[in-house]
Image 1 (cartoon, rainbow, N blue to C red):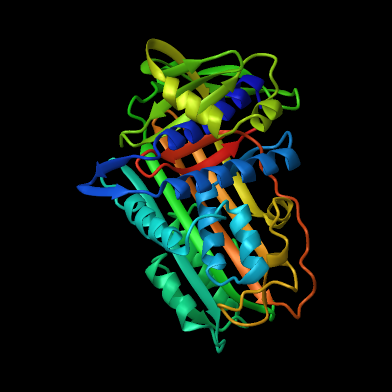
Image 2: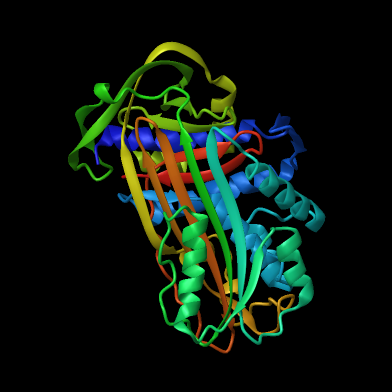
Length: 404
């Protein structure tokens, strides 16, 4: 991919982070609903989003990345509700939840899920959760109640020995993501698997200021690896939020729904995208959001792009961040039932950006199996390319990606 395109996408992701950060500590009214979000939870989710993205960038240098950190953290927090002891402590640490009370975590997810599912009219945004239990398993009722009341999860039992069970779960994910995420699970289901915890998210929004298709032109794009390709470069003159400093430029591309936008961070010439991402943090995000100002008649050129991020295993990145016990035979998920460990955390995502707007979807599966099985396998995650879709009202990073 062209270097300029790659840099532009990187800026998008980073800008989205920044807007999300600035949106925290605010109480806003949307769809006649006023909601206040816990500051610590906002910062925790933002930190986790940046941490998991940076980890993937290191492992997937030169490759496109696109994930929904909110989907991943939601699915993992569902699993966290069943953890105890050191397993719980490690999950809290990686999810940046160390000093946050259980009641604050519960209230945040109940509130933010209700808020994000309340957009009407100008955008489509839907977030759904589900729990799939192996038929006949004695799962603790308190855990099931938490899944239903906190995460508004659909809970169902299935005979995992039947191939139809995979079809049923995949169909639920496909429907929840408007047919963008398909065939995440492959049959057969291992006899050791006890449960699947799933989050699915779908977004479709038109730009507030659309690009004129007639002005799109062919341009060269130099990728992170130095290869040059041809891309369709969207082109428009806009009055939009803009910020520039020594290391990067940033813009905010608003969707028709005012609280949602795409942030684009473009490193200055000579600064590698990897170096830029490694130095990206909440301070950079906050500074950018604070200093974004309307720039009249700014020429904006961004490539059209589409990323289909196939099913990826996040075991290795999460273990690298410190979540080791949950993937081991020493895991303690006894608040679900005795003898469970996380065997796989799978993530699959999709995004398309064009002159009219953006469509994105993602799903995360946390697979729990009996600890009597073999030690968990370690897998590489593959994602590099930077852009974010965020919700300002709840300060939530819905999607983040890197396209190399």
